[in-house]
Length: 221
Image (cartoon, rainbow, N blue to C red; front, top):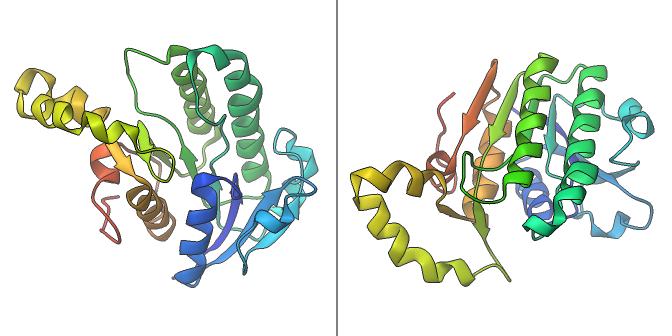
């Protein structure tokens, strides 16, 4: 089944790859962009101007999308960016949820973060608030919770792979190591595309183990 997808954050590290993959699979994609960013949208997708922090600037152009994918977030998050998490990540997600409700979107996909975790508490707190807002909205939703996504310019955590391997073998640390494990950008793109093609009924959560299933792998509902 082909889907009509509206993406916020479609010009970023993950959004450009997901847009290209969805187009390759035959879906229709429209991407919210700020003025001047139109050229960052992959060929074949339609740029839709608007302010991601203000749903009134773009809610009217979400329809006829059946799927809404929200990917906006502060780049390279760290504890010093707590105010930005609330002003950008939190505000944009709540605006996106409001816009999706107004447009009667059938399925909302939200890029969250693995939780609980011993670090990045402010970042996780904002994402948890947005997850609650999504649940309260009544929308069918898939919440995707990666921890660290490996890709171009984001490869240093490969050095931690031996430590993860050991922790996943120990029963006492296995669950935490898997929940806070590493995923590649290829796996993330495949997971998000699979979420589009397998809409949720109610709210479901895909953590790192589900994300790691790999390219074109089937995902449980």
